[in-house]
Length: 376
Image (cartoon, rainbow, N blue to C red):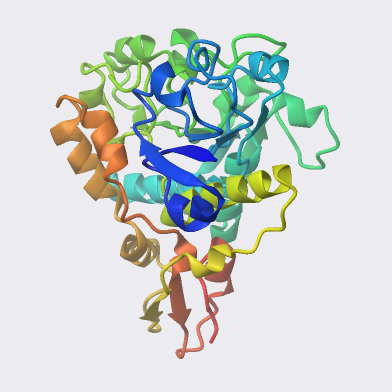
């Protein structure tokens, strides 16, 4: 069995080598010829899996995407071909939620404001939006949720409409799939009118898909709304962001909000489980054996709960400023966007840091935030 896998997916060989020949490929430039003799195709969101890509292949039995979304897979065509396909919902939810939370702490520090005093609106309350809500509530930040599909389901949380959320929130973080059809399309959900209506001094974060915000409209609005502060991890026209927009963005990164080592490993492992099920086999490997050991950090009585100290603690795990600096230097380079994603391997989640609290401080909220070992 031949298994083609995106080179940016970790632990592929450790998990799949027993099943057949593993070949790592550049998911962005993958061609029909390369796929022609594959039995299994493992991709990320940069690969469009459609009739054109699979035109030379008559043996593919499984497509796995190590992502939360499916918009890059032609599901109708795969179903027509009787090709099993799956994704990895929730695999990077913690990473994205923590990224947005860290970005908010960085903005609070930069502009000498307190995150804990703000109301944060979360647009899209699925896996990633819920992970952000968990971080914010652990720290004591008020949140409002907008998700019309979940509001119509059995979800017991309270939801507000989008206009109310925009009117009431100091911070807005976007966590929706990219859709152009249906009752609630998200393509250009934040157009020029909505962008102009943001509260004075609003912080706007996009960690889902670039086209949820009209990037040209954002440039236009920023001409007269310098008070709006923007964090973009995703960009219209990836892998070629609109260069004119970058100077107007406070924190800029190359679609790596979900690129924690844990999140990527979780995505690969979920595909491994799905393929084993497809083959009628029982998984015999564990994700826990793949990841490096936890780090340790000793808390002192003055470490928490001050917001400045919290940011210092968070930076021990992931210093977002580093990726912002690299992005600004390299995004215009040839293949710069994708090379930054490919080489992004240092990011960990809060759970990678084990905290020892010998000072007896009340820091249970840090455990709820996701750190390991609090109170030991």
